Amino acid sequence: MAERQSIELHINEETHVVSPDTGNTLLQVLRSTLSLTGTKRGCNQGVCGACTVLRNGVPARSCLTLAVECDDEEITTIEGLAPNGKASIVQQAFVKVGAPQCGFCMPGMVLVATALLREHSNPDQAEIREALSGNLCRCTGYVKIAEAIELAAEQLV
Image (cartoon, rainbow, N blue to C red; front, top):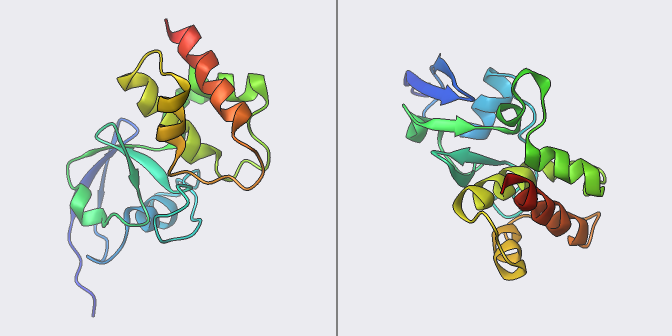
């Protein structure tokens, strides 16, 4: 029988007390226990970035992160960027420039962009490329995604 541990997760400014198996990933808890399905399961090996969330403000692969490691931490999922259904500036910029195609990778991309812009309010192309380097998209050449990040940076100034 798997061990369970009660933990407190602060997700999108709400506190959740859950008791996952100690081997459950944050991705499993988000999707299966809390029904936060905006975080996507892609490769399940930490390579594609579809499962990216912000863990204490820093991008993290939720498929590689054990939920119990996040006890009493701040987690932001894509749902947390649009409280009350109002899209964030980054989300609005992605839509405005037509960055989303199939949309599967977009939650991770948007969260990485959000973290980048919090750290560097006016990133150059090299910083944008570096930030996106861990997120794969099979539908685009990343040009529109980089444009969206530049547009969001302009709007945040």
